[in-house]
Amino acid sequence: MDVKFKILRFDPDKDKKPHWESYQVEMEPTDRVLDGLELIKGRVDGTLGLRRSCAHGVCGSDAMLINGKNLLACKVLVKSLPQPITIEPMRGFNVLRDLIVDMEPFFAKYRAVKPYLIEKDERPEHKERLQSPADREKFEDTTKCILCGACTTSCPSFWANPDYVGPAAIVQAHRFIFDSRDQGKEERVEVLDGRDGVWRCRTVFNCVEACPKGINVTKAIGEVKQALSKGELDPPK
Amino acid sequence: MRLYKGGVGQASWALHRLTGIGVLFFLFTHIADTALIMVGPEWYNKIIAIYQMPLFGISEIFLFAAVLFHSLNGLRIVIIDFWPEATVHHKLLFKGMMGIFLAVFIPVAWIMLGHALHGGAH
Ligand code: SF4
Ligand code: FES
Image (cartoon, rainbow over all chains, first blue to last red):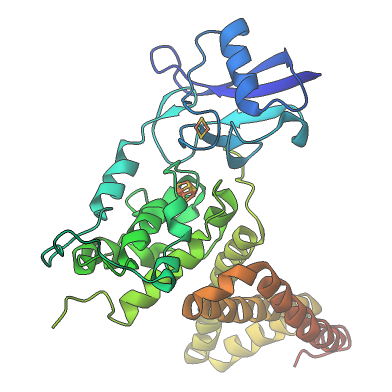
């Protein structure tokens, strides 16, 4: 089948502002949007800039605005979309070229929440730190995040204030805050409870709809809000 | 820039802002018109006479809709904030809220419309 694409192109060396370009390629209905972009890049216009790696919804490289919604290009079948399929880079980040955005500020926020297990006590010798299945379940949902950025760049609070730590970083913080083995909860409070922390969330639910991993992002943010307001993340007295 | 295609969450968030600003705007004008009493009763009476025109009666219906939506939606957000588990059913919660909105709005708007058209608001 013939598939029409409309892509928002931007080359910082040549263009003052982004502009739309139309393309048409021959594809199978069961091909994915990413296949279409690869076809365009391979056969029609090699200058098209995009990020991808796994092509299987695992690496989180190819989140973009597809028909006005954040999706992973490698997960959507072309037959499921009305044409022309419009493609734009994620919103709220600086566009480096075409669909490639500067994700450094995004990863800076990721690092700011200390997304790793913080141990204070001595590790039990030759033993694991045990955890009950019920305790493990508490953060099961947030282990699935692939850091694609779809949630953060679908969030009106983030568009309005790029300093907002954003859903993705909160999901990552949740992953460790609710891990019974973690002992660094208070080290994350400053970022989460600060003026650009969780309280900027207005429960818009765009993040939940955008997440390609089906994470209930708003619930995770809500649990962090609750933990903060109940003082559960304060340093032990 | 085109609108992001969000779901009911985005729509209700946008409406919440819009109704919030609308009600705030009404409050300011209301403060201003009430303050006219200090300028002179005749000024105050003039402005109240304008308010009793059907056009204003109808805009009062919009005001009522805005206040009602803003309060119900606010409660919905409170529920979600206090019980994060409610996020799982957030669409149902929105539908339920809109159900209550319509159930209250339609009869009240009907009565208000009657008042607005057949002389004298309130
Ligand atoms: S929470 Fe979901 S949408 Fe957000 S970065 Fe992680 S995988 Fe992507
Ligand atoms: S290319 Fe890896 S998630 Fe799409």
